[in-house]
Image (cartoon, rainbow, N blue to C red; front, side):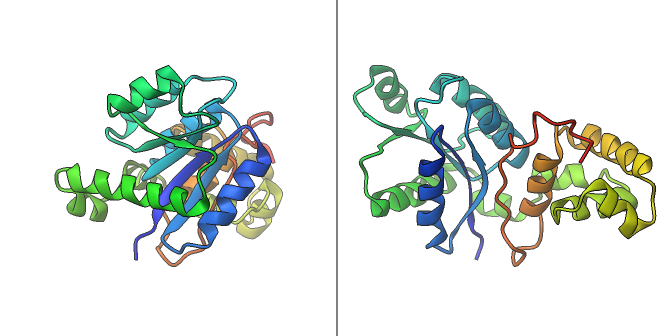
Length: 228
């Protein structure tokens, strides 16, 4: 069974945890990234190209329009559900009426949340030409991974397992500086900015029975992305 890959974003950690707990009860969902701000959400959508995104309508650093534009550029028709404290916001209502997004009240019960996510994903698959064929074809991330050398793919796999540069060096018998050079080349080839997104990309493109990887794509943005 192909699971629904979802990016979630909310400024409140307890809300993120609650959403993840609800979705963990349903085997057809896998959270590929959880974000606490708009910039992280946009980057996660760009890199991971999920099936759907559930986004806090009141993220402090971006407006709903600023989420929708880059999401549409990466994946036209990508369903975006804005989780809102109130559904009476006129701008959100206008976007929803235009078909640009779905607005769901934070007062909704878990069953309504799950049903809305499933329906939005199914509707998108139904209206997308060649949707069934597309689900079998490589995503952009899969094609980018083919640009990597064998050694670079080894390093990506070890990064996705949570190993530090030093641990990777010991595993591959390479010095720390060589690992940093390889990571620099990998980031350039895959157009990612940090090792957390690199790990999320690798996990999300792994075989269907591999453990689903959910990472916070903004977790390491304050660090040197090549250092560990």
